[in-house]
Length: 373
Length: 224
Image (cartoon, chains in turn purple, cyan):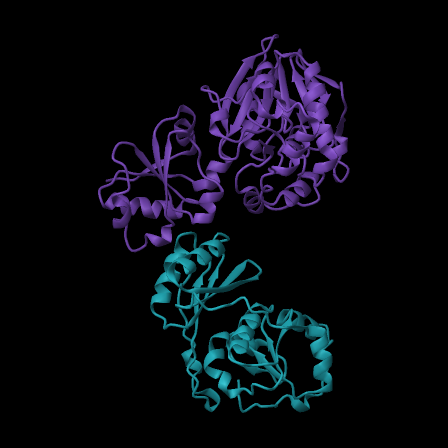
């Protein structure tokens, strides 16, 4: 029985469309516990490949007959070996091409909407890590917001659409993933915007974001709204007066954590003000587009991660805390573990560290942890 | 890829210098191999060893550290540690010794401090626990060679009440050797760090100057 190779984009369909899948994850237990391919209809079995070297007899009975089976490992090699062993036993299985490494780097492209002038807004959903990037396209021009380091995806898409990237924004200095912003800006000659409060240690030239700054892409407006709290410079963007890009301040089912630059107590007040005052002044009809999602249930049926601000005001737990002290406790005492290598990632985004590609990959391994719930 | 993956029992050394010590150092070269091969080879190599033997696995796959650790735990071997030299990872394991306590710390002495001490007292007992090849390339005059894997079988040749200074390339292997000695009742064991990497640099710069009067010290131990 031949072994099938499954590409990350096929796995994305199982993940987004909630198609039943059985994942045999052959990485070691720590890696599996830390992060895995998520999906609401995915079942899992985690057995390290080195426990299967003598044969797969022990697990044959544990594999379902009524759903597709995918063998997954870190980089591909072990899953291929185990998949071949299973296949020799007459079991139909696939293995994930490129392993979790490829899964972590895969971006699912979703069109969020058509803009007033006829332009388009796209979301790049990094399913493996929960990062969201955006491209605003209008009249042959484009702006990229919160780009990941897989910059080819943005270059290729811009080329496919026949647009020139003129502006690159980061809502804040990211601590959980390496930004592709600077690379894109340098390659295209675009302006790279960062909040200056986050960029004190940055070693390259950039344009400063300020509250009320308005940039146009074609005829589409992108307006900066100063919204500190996750970092001291965190800035949101209102695109085309219809979309609110919240960065790491407000997510679908959670709110930003204030501690990744080591300032939880200082910044919790800012976070409160942004969420409970600043955002209240905006139109409730804005469609919120965050920079992250944490769980697959935050992903809409069409693969996008987006929700009306009005819905979040009534449903997001982090926006329901009337008492300020209670809020303070919520965001300073319920903090999840900090992301893998977050200090090094921040330094890389400042340009202070310049790790090679392989090191960058290793630094980003693991789940996203930018929220408090 | 043209790489040979092999286990090297360093038995060609047995008998040299009149020693009747059985060498038990085993090295598996898994450099350039991607997962799962380093573990597949390690497992195979381990099968050919005796309980208590130490296996050193050379690998370049970064994921191998976590996997070796997890594999050792699941198969009852002790994971002793990993030493990094450039791009190469040196993983050390002890067969069937999962319950061996390796947490014990060995006192560390800085190379500079140690060298000053040595200038004053050329009779210090220095044990170089690197591979014989490494030892032959360069070693501190007077240093006795016991590869890491030989420590257990050779330690009876040492005096438990004497000060013993252990050295390797970076301090990792000598640390492991120190634990083994301490476990066997050696009271005054010191790990010299950062080891021969630094010593060789100093030597190149001409910073190492002793009279050679002690260079044949205890040469009866090994004559390479």
